[in-house]
Amino acid sequence: MKTIPAFLIGIAAAALGAGAAGAAAHDPYSNYLELRVYRAQEGQRDSFLAYFEDNLLETQEAHPMRIWGEFRDVQNEHQFVWMRGYRTMGERLESLQGFYFGPVWAEKGPEVMQSLFDGRVIAYLLEPMREGSGFSALPGREPAGGERGVIGVEIYVLEGGERDAVVEHLHSVALAHHEKCGGVTLGLFETSDEQNNFPMLQHNEDQHVIVWVGSYASAEAFDRASAGAGGIEPDTRLTLEPGPRSRLSHRE
Image (cartoon, rainbow, N blue to C red):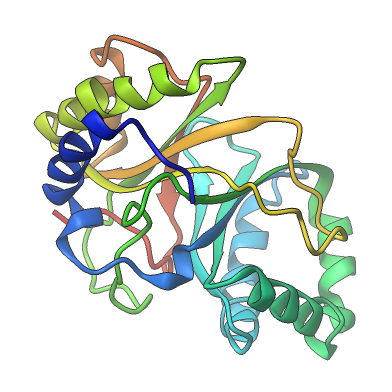
């Protein structure tokens, strides 16, 4: 687990405590989190989202892992994003072996991926940036109805000695700004030091990143907040529309 400067711990706890990440106990299925960004073939994103929700949720969670959410990228009509979590790296290996070498994936998985995606994948293997900054336990994935808002993701790519500066920016500026603008911080993550123990799935291991995950009532609200944040800008900002069965959605 990563550490942050001691003088920031109190600020971090207070900021996360105001949002969903601090409102309930840390869910161990976010101890290790994969953030996966796929590029769909022209016009195929919605088809894959429907296939994913119909066929790849319960079948993956039959193994010790959790699908936290599946999303359309609001600002890129070709991008499909999803998040998958594990309690331990040992369970990650067990789960991925069981799923990808099992009958469900063998039947249609490779065929579907080839027909719907162009092969470009961005993926990060993450862990909570500090103790307790993973996702809290959330309700089941069946939606309660009504608007589900958006999930915001901000990715900071670290170079050299930038980590302390980014951490300080998050805890002294960004978290409070999101809260003031109506956002809810769901989690703070960082590239895991653990080695990828399932190399069949590649990750961007050459990049060390810090990732903020939060929610807003609308894409417009997130856009307005992003425009006025100030300080260190993230290298990538994703505005994600939750799929109908996504566990992650906006909850005030």
